[in-house]
Image (cartoon, rainbow, N blue to C red; front, side, top):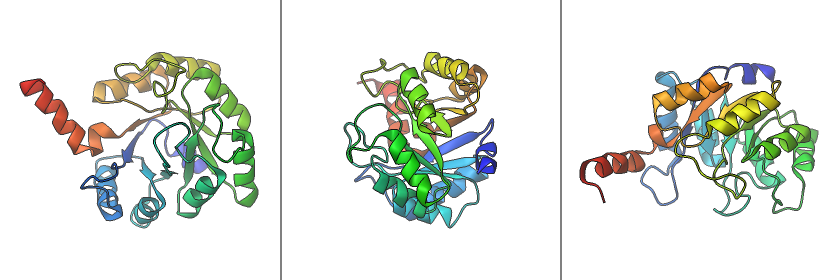
Amino acid sequence: MTDVIDALAGGLIVSCQAYPGEPLRQPDTMARMADAVVAGGAVSIRAQGVDDISTIKSRTTVPLIGLWKEGTDGVFITPTLRHATAVREAGADIVALDGTRRARPDGLTLTATITRLRDSAPTVVMADCASLDDALAARDAGADIIGTTLAGYTDYRPMTDGPDLDLLAQLVSRLPDVPIIAEGRVHTPAQARAALDTGAYAVVVGTAITHPTTITGWFRQALIGD
């Protein structure tokens, strides 16, 4: 399992996801997107939903970080043990789940979720966190990797313009033995470089690479404003 984590070191992870109802919301489309970003040098793919995960896994060889979003509020990133098990069984090399201290829909603690997940098979777990306290608790719960994914998306911290480098620096300092992955609002190569320079083990970029609707909106805003 350490080989999977080692493969991420210093690299670019690309999140290949599309929102419900969008033209690109098809497993084959996301798999083609994954092919394209791997050709560009991505060391790993982050994908959502069991169909996308299984399709991408069948076509790529880089480590696959899988998750399953259920809903849009509260704990919705791989929110239960059932979701986590399904993500792993779909082919994810790393299971990403909500790593905050909020109550989970199935009533299990994060510790219980990770423990029971590993009772059935060895599993590398990435905890998507929103604060330093989340990250410390996720480390104690047994998470192998910590991500800044939810920074700014809960009440724990305000949303920053760009990646939350202050939180990233805190995590790197307080959790020196845990790989810390920078994720969330990394929109430019310079921001990705800054995250790595701050101490990130690897950097996830999603929207800025794989979401043309948002990228188009950025350009339109720059040209004509509101």
